Structure formats: structure tokens, C-alpha cells
Length: 201
Image (tube, rainbow, N blue to C red):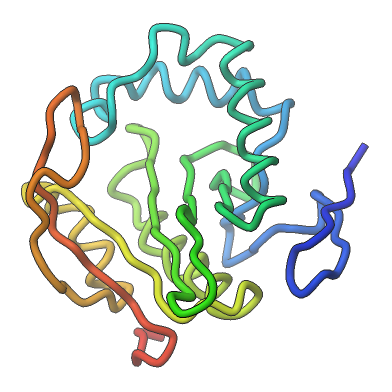
């Protein structure tokens, strides 16, 4: 049964099932309990591909209990207007491809959020994330009313840099020891896209 979300988008009530972003054959939608097996399988098969770019995975990361905790945290963060996590799937067959998140939502003077994303190894290099990033940014600037979306990536992550630059993000700086990735503090390139920027397409 779909839940009602209160406090999203100017106080309107929307069902979980109604919060989805469709673009071509792709969809960004809220994670749900029914996704566990597909999510765990995709993350497990993609472990070697993903781990160089992510914080260390907890030992129980792929267990049902950890997934339940993840969903609870997602729900709390959405309802507090702190973060908006989505799963990326193919509409034609429902295949789970990856995930896209808007994290660290800041209102008042900042009106910004931080973009994060991951893609299953088998689905990388097919342009899916290059389609998803503009969609999530349109959601941030439109339905969430934000004015700035920030992103950071490792300097050697050429694929991620291409995704961001293709979406119109501009490189703004270099942050030393910005995040803990694969067990070590790593420098990152900083990017941002403004609602007022001219965007491809």
C-alpha cells in the first residue's frame, strides 16, 4: 500500500507511487521494500566496480536488515526535507540500473543540495546516468525549488566527470581530503549547476 508523504513540494500530499520521474525508457522512483533482492544482487555483482568510488561498505551492507534500516533512513530524510533518494530503473522491463540521490538539502540562504549517484556494473557506459542527472536536477530546481546542485568526484573518475560536464555542471574547485572513499580521505573535484545556468537540451 502506498503511503502519503506530507511536507513535500509546498505541503501537498503525494503518494510514494506518484513520486516518479519518467524520461524516455528510464524512471527515477522512490526505493521500496520490494526492491531488496534486485538491489542486493545488483550491488553484489557490482562490488568490485563500485567500491573504488564509494565509502567502505559495512559488513552487513547487503543484508535484509540493513536494507530495512536504509529505507527507514531514506523515509526520515525525505520527510525532514534533508535528502531525496531515488532508484533508477528501465521502464520497459523494470530492470534496476542504479541510484541517484539529492543529499544535504539546505534551505534559507543556500537553497542547494548535493548530488550523488551509482550505476550497476552491467549498465555502465550506456548513457543512463547522463540521462538521469538532468532529470534529477530538473526535479531539484522545479519541484523542490532549489537554486544550486553541487557534486564532487575523484579526479581520476573520468566517467563521472563526463556525466557532470555533459549535464552542464561547471568545475568550481578542488577540495583536499573531502570524503572518505575506500577507506582513505580523498581529494575531490567540485562541480555545481545553478538553476539559472544554460543547460544542454
